[in-house]
Length: 384
Picture 1 (cartoon, one colour):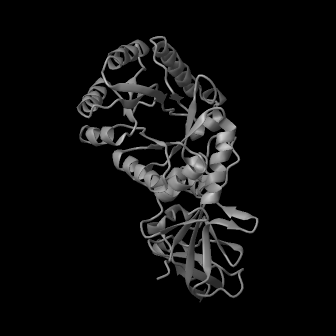
Picture 2: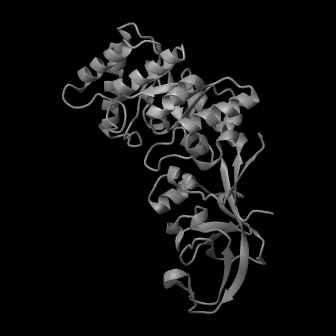
Picture 3: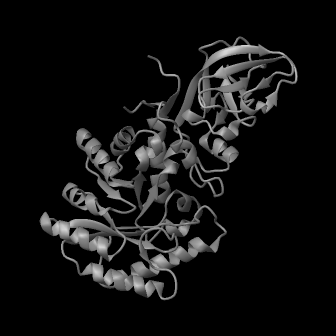
């Protein structure tokens, strides 16, 4: 049966975005971040399309995500590195080592567990040192009084562990969407100093990275030597943090569609929806569309947002509810039940993007994309 709400993912646009990013940062490599099911849009289709486009490095947040991408790559006969970018839990270590996933090292105890598993399986396990230069969340802590020296001391101990190949070293920026804030520059300087000291010990890292999507756009110093690669997730989708620069020419890859459920002519003074937050100032034609906040439409679109119906931008009126949203279609001729509604996407030269919804909601586009509901059909197109 035809689904009420569909998000169409343009895989051709995804590949164009990947290639634009790769061109912008070359000679650095691009690590495509596909965590959380490619931010809820369907990791298998993303991995297939990007592998076919030449991407050879994928990043995820946790073990099951890594295994899913490995399975997809095996199905299509593609060779690529898959690495966890956050942490590995104790019960995940053995399977991750046996599967060949590149693992993060956030401290000595984690490194020791990975080393023991590598010995157990008689393997040389590739790992990346994760350095906390100011995010305060995960990693070998390098901040505070004597932080750099303490971090280097821990790294020295880790370097003595057997059966580990130190494939990379990376850190995570906390404020890279704010170009004028000095914090990110301090993070980059601290990280570079640590990398330099470790390299003096004879360690040759293949992957050195601190830049994710925000830093790619805002901090050119993170997209050149000594760095060798960048991470990108939200820019692959064609979105940006609302506060930063937009150095990349990328395009939105998704279109969210639903359908009109009913068209009603309401007399003056009629109130709409929970809380009666809107009343008709005069005779008004209302379309009830078959999508609400359970499908990913932010509640903040109430009396503020727009959708496209009949080729025109139509305002949301009344409060967005779980399953339905009411829209003023007085300016649109001949609207009927079953007509298509574009909630996110293009309409002629006009466009509504996840960034637009993020601005209304007071959040960032990650939140918008990840909030698309479980009953929304994900429909990759073109490069299947």
